[in-house]
Length: 325
Image (cartoon, rainbow, N blue to C red):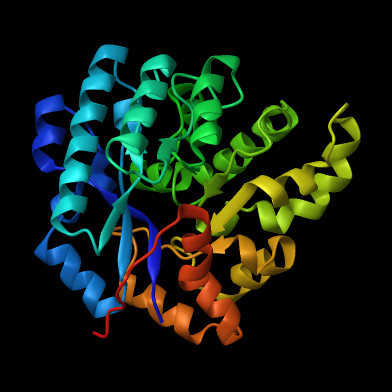
């Protein structure tokens, strides 16, 4: 069974150092794996049975930079991604990094990455300086993605200082960092970000825009019926309900979620055709993720859709050969 993984991060060590970026204690511990785009990464993929990684820079820190610097670092990262794909064209694809503090530059970089470098879309990390993707200033980026026929992968990011101070102060530093990010905070914030886009009418204006979120839907499958009951009645003049919009425009990946209950919830809420496989390398184990994929209570047809079929349909990933290893 072919396996395509969509949320697989990278970041060259020398770019981190030259740009003076701070990844925090937990992410900094993964820099050796983020920096590796050759033997070590390929070995981890082979050991787990992952055929293709769609690479993306772990770039929330880049979005926080001043516009000119963000544009320079984004371009550097995209060139590194393109080089890695060129070295291993059967194993890697890429999502672009965009300088979100300059929306017009981000739009132009998305066009360059898709049309010149062959990228499959872009990954955006949460809000940028308080600006969410429903803001009118960001609409040129989203409209361009729709026009190009490529998705936006919306990845969580650490909370802005005001949110951190309000919700996570007074705790042990390690606990606060985890609670505000992977332990809870960024899942709820990413889900809220998606709902902002829905209620603000982004998908009414851009009905062909495809949005991907990870972590089995960032809690949206569990809350979907409650959201529909409470939120839809107050959203006026939309052609679809909130749940109908989400089921039309949103895709979910399994990144970091290797348990049956969240998978069954996502299947029930969104259907197997909207679920894609991801690992969240190097923050999760590729071997554990693929082992869980192979043992999950799914029909073989549904397993194949999640493993590769849905990604092939959404991203146009094709391979003339199939690995036997």
